[in-house]
Length: 196
Image 1 (cartoon, helix red, strand yellow):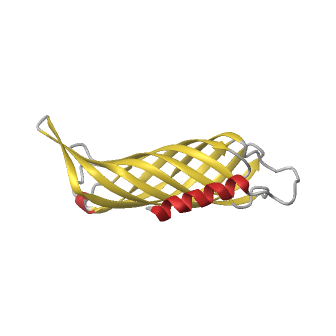
Image 2 (tube, helix red, strand yellow):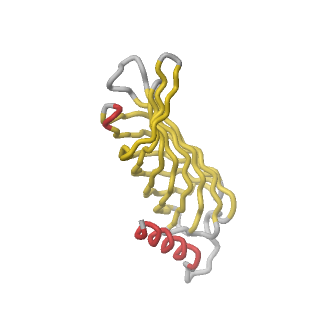
Image 3 (cartoon, one colour):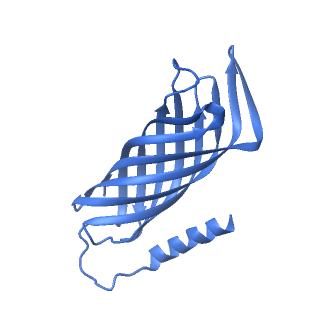
């Protein structure tokens, strides 16, 4: 855990104090409010729901750029997957994340970045839901279309630790705290549209 905190602190400090030696005008606006919409494919993996669970997902994020390199994001994501254990019932996945993004080449048309986020997640189907927290790591690249608009491609890997189980049988709801927690993972490849 202390390595994760150290990594977050290093990224944050590097982003806040990184200065370009060339003071030319940036080709895009990174300071201030940003909105991002993501659409793509998701792959969840949780043995208690049948193993690999492919599906589609969308995300909506609001961010604040502190400088050309550093942005803090709050993102909501959700999607559905095909339930391999029950052909007539699809499942769902959702989450809320707070993350930090570091941009490597903010003055260029093609801008690679890395990000890290902490999140709260839930996965399940109508009668059974697991919820808990986790960590998300991502890499991506944005292509500037205009000073205030970019399109991007992002790959994310998430590790989840589900600590609660909710079950609804014949109208009766029950909630169980899981000890030990169930470990899940997911990955996503998203096309993003960023308005800044």
